[in-house]
Image (cartoon, rainbow, N blue to C red; front, side):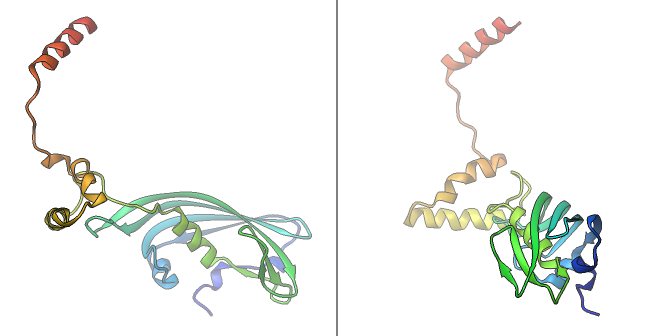
Length: 193
Protein backbone atom coordinates (compact mmCIF):
# COMPACT_ATOMS: atom_id res chain seq x y z
CA UNK A 1 0.00 0.00 0.00
CA UNK A 2 1.44 3.38 -1.06
CA UNK A 3 1.76 6.30 1.32
CA UNK A 4 -0.93 8.31 -0.53
CA UNK A 5 -3.38 5.55 -1.49
CA UNK A 6 -6.02 7.13 0.76
CA UNK A 7 -5.99 10.15 -1.57
CA UNK A 8 -6.96 8.22 -4.70
CA UNK A 9 -10.39 9.14 -6.00
CA UNK A 10 -11.95 6.14 -7.83
CA UNK A 11 -13.49 8.30 -10.56
CA UNK A 12 -14.33 5.52 -12.99
CA UNK A 13 -16.36 3.60 -10.41
CA UNK A 14 -18.29 6.62 -9.06
CA UNK A 15 -21.97 6.81 -9.85
CA UNK A 16 -23.39 9.95 -11.44
CA UNK A 17 -23.96 12.57 -8.76
CA UNK A 18 -22.08 14.15 -5.88
CA UNK A 19 -19.59 12.34 -3.62
CA UNK A 20 -17.78 13.81 -0.60
CA UNK A 21 -14.40 12.95 0.91
CA UNK A 22 -12.69 14.43 3.95
CA UNK A 23 -9.02 14.41 4.87
CA UNK A 24 -6.99 15.67 7.82
CA UNK A 25 -3.62 16.92 6.61
CA UNK A 26 -1.33 16.91 9.64
CA UNK A 27 2.42 17.40 10.07
CA UNK A 28 3.00 13.72 9.24
CA UNK A 29 1.25 14.23 5.87
CA UNK A 30 3.34 17.33 5.14
CA UNK A 31 6.50 15.35 5.98
CA UNK A 32 5.49 12.56 3.59
CA UNK A 33 4.60 14.94 0.76
CA UNK A 34 8.02 16.60 1.23
CA UNK A 35 7.08 19.89 -0.42
CA UNK A 36 9.48 22.84 -0.37
CA UNK A 37 7.15 25.62 0.87
CA UNK A 38 5.28 24.06 3.80
CA UNK A 39 6.45 21.25 6.07
CA UNK A 40 4.13 21.49 9.10
CA UNK A 41 0.47 22.11 9.67
CA UNK A 42 -2.99 20.89 10.45
CA UNK A 43 -5.46 21.43 7.63
CA UNK A 44 -8.91 19.95 7.12
CA UNK A 45 -9.71 19.20 3.47
CA UNK A 46 -13.21 18.62 2.16
CA UNK A 47 -13.30 17.31 -1.39
CA UNK A 48 -16.53 17.07 -3.38
CA UNK A 49 -16.59 15.16 -6.67
CA UNK A 50 -19.50 15.86 -9.01
CA UNK A 51 -19.80 13.18 -11.70
CA UNK A 52 -21.81 14.51 -14.63
CA UNK A 53 -21.46 11.33 -16.65
CA UNK A 54 -18.85 12.70 -19.05
CA UNK A 55 -16.56 14.74 -16.77
CA UNK A 56 -15.76 15.16 -13.08
CA UNK A 57 -15.80 18.45 -11.23
CA UNK A 58 -13.57 18.21 -8.14
CA UNK A 59 -14.14 20.96 -5.57
CA UNK A 60 -11.59 21.50 -2.81
CA UNK A 61 -12.21 23.40 0.43
CA UNK A 62 -9.28 23.66 2.83
CA UNK A 63 -9.29 25.24 6.29
CA UNK A 64 -6.57 25.13 8.91
CA UNK A 65 -3.17 26.36 9.97
CA UNK A 66 0.28 25.73 8.52
CA UNK A 67 3.65 26.71 9.90
CA UNK A 68 6.10 28.53 7.67
CA UNK A 69 9.44 30.16 8.50
CA UNK A 70 9.31 33.89 9.15
CA UNK A 71 11.19 35.75 6.42
CA UNK A 72 12.82 37.99 9.01
CA UNK A 73 13.81 35.78 11.99
CA UNK A 74 13.46 32.30 10.41
CA UNK A 75 11.39 30.94 13.33
CA UNK A 76 8.24 29.02 12.45
CA UNK A 77 5.09 31.07 12.51
CA UNK A 78 1.45 29.96 12.19
CA UNK A 79 -0.42 30.99 9.07
CA UNK A 80 -4.17 30.49 8.66
CA UNK A 81 -5.24 28.79 5.43
CA UNK A 82 -8.73 29.10 4.00
CA UNK A 83 -8.81 28.20 0.35
CA UNK A 84 -11.22 26.91 -2.27
CA UNK A 85 -10.27 25.51 -5.63
CA UNK A 86 -11.78 23.61 -8.54
CA UNK A 87 -10.45 20.99 -10.93
CA UNK A 88 -12.17 19.52 -13.98
CA UNK A 89 -11.12 15.96 -14.84
CA UNK A 90 -11.81 14.20 -18.12
CA UNK A 91 -10.83 10.76 -19.41
CA UNK A 92 -8.62 10.45 -22.48
CA UNK A 93 -5.90 8.32 -24.03
CA UNK A 94 -3.05 9.79 -21.92
CA UNK A 95 -2.38 12.30 -19.16
CA UNK A 96 -2.54 15.95 -20.25
CA UNK A 97 -3.18 19.37 -18.74
CA UNK A 98 -5.51 21.42 -20.92
CA UNK A 99 -5.33 24.42 -18.56
CA UNK A 100 -4.70 25.24 -14.90
CA UNK A 101 -8.15 23.96 -14.10
CA UNK A 102 -8.69 21.11 -16.60
CA UNK A 103 -6.73 17.85 -16.75
CA UNK A 104 -7.11 14.65 -18.73
CA UNK A 105 -6.23 11.31 -17.16
CA UNK A 106 -5.89 7.94 -18.90
CA UNK A 107 -9.17 6.06 -18.93
CA UNK A 108 -7.22 2.89 -18.16
CA UNK A 109 -6.17 4.38 -14.79
CA UNK A 110 -9.69 5.33 -13.80
CA UNK A 111 -8.56 7.11 -10.63
CA UNK A 112 -6.93 10.36 -9.59
CA UNK A 113 -4.53 10.79 -6.67
CA UNK A 114 -5.20 14.25 -5.23
CA UNK A 115 -2.42 14.36 -2.60
CA UNK A 116 -0.18 16.68 -4.63
CA UNK A 117 -3.15 18.82 -5.75
CA UNK A 118 -4.00 19.41 -2.06
CA UNK A 119 -0.41 20.42 -1.34
CA UNK A 120 -0.32 22.82 -4.29
CA UNK A 121 -3.52 24.53 -3.14
CA UNK A 122 -1.99 25.05 0.31
CA UNK A 123 1.36 26.25 -1.07
CA UNK A 124 -0.35 28.76 -3.37
CA UNK A 125 -2.31 30.15 -0.40
CA UNK A 126 0.92 31.10 1.39
CA UNK A 127 1.72 34.78 0.73
CA UNK A 128 5.07 35.67 -0.82
CA UNK A 129 6.10 37.62 2.29
CA UNK A 130 5.36 36.07 5.66
CA UNK A 131 6.62 37.75 8.79
CA UNK A 132 5.60 37.77 12.43
CA UNK A 133 3.49 40.69 13.63
CA UNK A 134 5.61 43.60 14.97
CA UNK A 135 7.41 42.66 18.17
CA UNK A 136 6.84 38.89 17.82
CA UNK A 137 10.05 37.95 16.00
CA UNK A 138 12.89 36.16 17.75
CA UNK A 139 14.69 38.99 19.59
CA UNK A 140 18.21 37.61 19.10
CA UNK A 141 17.73 37.12 15.36
CA UNK A 142 16.07 40.54 15.00
CA UNK A 143 19.08 42.14 16.69
CA UNK A 144 21.46 40.38 14.28
CA UNK A 145 19.33 41.49 11.33
CA UNK A 146 19.42 45.13 12.47
CA UNK A 147 23.23 44.98 12.82
CA UNK A 148 23.57 43.45 9.35
CA UNK A 149 21.22 45.98 7.78
CA UNK A 150 23.03 48.85 9.48
CA UNK A 151 26.29 47.68 7.88
CA UNK A 152 24.71 47.19 4.47
CA UNK A 153 23.06 50.64 4.63
CA UNK A 154 26.56 52.15 4.78
CA UNK A 155 27.35 50.44 1.46
CA UNK A 156 24.06 50.85 -0.41
CA UNK A 157 20.37 51.53 -0.01
CA UNK A 158 18.44 48.47 1.21
CA UNK A 159 14.68 48.44 0.69
CA UNK A 160 14.06 46.19 3.73
CA UNK A 161 15.90 48.60 6.01
CA UNK A 162 13.12 51.15 5.57
CA UNK A 163 10.70 48.61 7.02
CA UNK A 164 12.58 48.22 10.27
CA UNK A 165 11.00 51.19 12.04
CA UNK A 166 7.50 49.88 11.46
CA UNK A 167 8.49 46.25 11.98
CA UNK A 168 10.16 46.96 15.32
CA UNK A 169 8.04 49.73 16.84
CA UNK A 170 9.17 49.02 20.40
CA UNK A 171 12.64 50.27 19.49
CA UNK A 172 11.69 53.46 17.66
CA UNK A 173 13.24 56.47 19.35
CA UNK A 174 10.85 59.07 20.69
CA UNK A 175 11.11 62.43 19.00
CA UNK A 176 10.37 65.81 20.53
CA UNK A 177 6.96 67.20 19.74
CA UNK A 178 6.27 70.60 18.29
CA UNK A 179 4.54 72.85 20.89
CA UNK A 180 2.37 74.46 18.19
CA UNK A 181 0.93 71.06 17.23
CA UNK A 182 0.40 70.18 20.90
CA UNK A 183 -1.73 73.31 21.37
CA UNK A 184 -3.74 72.55 18.22
CA UNK A 185 -4.41 69.01 19.46
CA UNK A 186 -5.72 70.45 22.73
CA UNK A 187 -8.14 72.70 20.79
CA UNK A 188 -9.31 69.74 18.73
CA UNK A 189 -9.95 67.72 21.91
CA UNK A 190 -12.01 70.62 23.35
CA UNK A 191 -14.15 70.70 20.18
CA UNK A 192 -14.86 66.98 20.49
CA UNK A 193 -16.15 67.35 24.08
